[in-house]
Image (cartoon, rainbow, N blue to C red; front, side):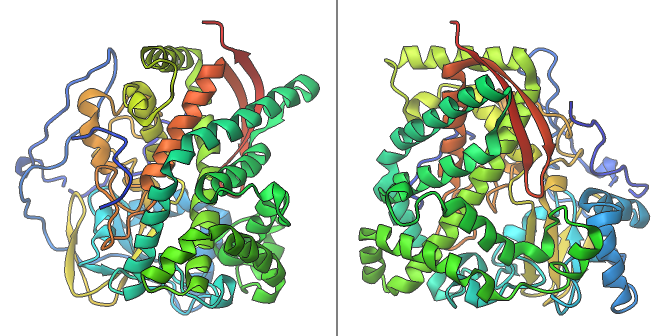
Length: 522
């Protein structure tokens, strides 16, 4: 079971080509109107609704600070990575300042980042300002207070580092919409083929060794699936062979090393990847192999890039980034988390999912389609709940364009032009002022009336009930991610009544070992 401790301690002070895959339509209590949602499932607690109407909150100076130059950032880096870990780092300072909005230093700090001071937004009310591109700029902030060398991305600033005000942003996002639309009919068959083989391999591993490593199998399945579904190419049949996931891992490490923990001896890790960026030449050959694979696979997509005014090289570097970093990285992390939370749900949840999925399939002539999956409210809700409780990309940044007032539940804060704000998404999506039992995995949380809470599910760089477009930073492949997660559960429970897992720690996501797969009996 997940911990029942809330991440937010009680304060002492008061145009996309993909259709939506869901159907969602301070304490100063005397000045708030709370509307509880009626339960739709027996024994189920649902979340509170947000404040209705404008609320006048007191303006408060943002507490906290960076401490003594150099010493403060180094101290905070030790706390963040080793002494406390991110959750306790944020939580302890919420208690200290009696505020979910405060100043602090964030990694990597010296010598990688020039300035590590940020304003933290650690509740579900303040966090969404980071999505409002009329108020915040997103230029060069994808990785926060530092930016990896452009040599790691072909000397191009790829789309995650672009602000929507930059001309290339709209062109690149338009290209991604084109790719998704042109290949949409290939997603379901390629997924079923690829992940059907993954489950066969897991069964073989369990029968021979007693356990099977889901993460290792999922890495290869994810890379194969994306290559086949989006580009019509099997990497195993090219010079890349089986090396794709390994090359991507090393490239991502070079991009994110300063903000990762890899389990190395603390001193070694601290004075290497947390203090210095790896020189790009270490992965130049790996990146060149990935680039050559994508350039040869993209074909008609590069022709479209020509038509909309992008160079073929810029288009290729960007599609490599979003495929390998965003899509592959997202599936790698999220599928492990999905299996973890569904696995922990136990036999009762597994039986309910299996019954719903198999019944819907029989009612639709045995064909798996997007429309058929809309008839599975529990399965849909369970996917959203996994995205809520453990979003695959937890960090969000934005630089203030002009002075603005940011509100938490209890206070308002003046944030000045040019200041950098940071949001830690797991605290926003587990805000106890928005969700009941926020630290618990509640599979049916978003069923029935609970669908209105989808606006508080924020994993895609925007609320779940919003859509990506050329003018915002919401993930172009948002609906694709939701679709493949649904397909994962459909494929799983068409084949099996239940399954058992062992969960371990990992530098990114969860380490999941599958210990049993109980074949379908009804």
